[in-house]
Length: 141
Image (spheres, rainbow, N blue to C red):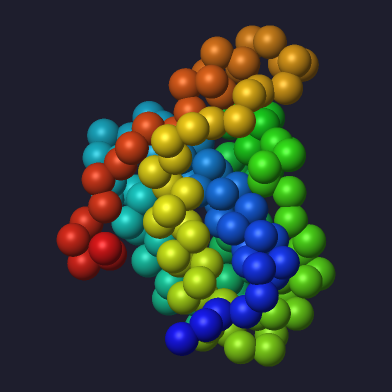
């Protein structure tokens, strides 16, 4: 089974990377149970009834994450073409959601982080910490 072209997947993977970072900074960073918070956010995205609800939730997470860390959604590795993503989601939302979730799980466990931009020195240390590995509940794997 194939899920689209590599070009579309690059945008989708970058979008998933940005959302994964947003989930970490907006919901997980100071939580008592970060694994549960991650699961709750993924479940909310997964249960979106349509593409509009999905993008509304994802963009809200990006805004909240960016409020906590100015690098969320602005790093070069997190850039994506929103218009292409929206068109792809409108074409086949179920397929889009499956592939997004696959990339979200992959990007939630980064092993190498891109270097932080030189500006915003006070959050540079925090950015270089990266997103720690989180436990993923067994039913999500």
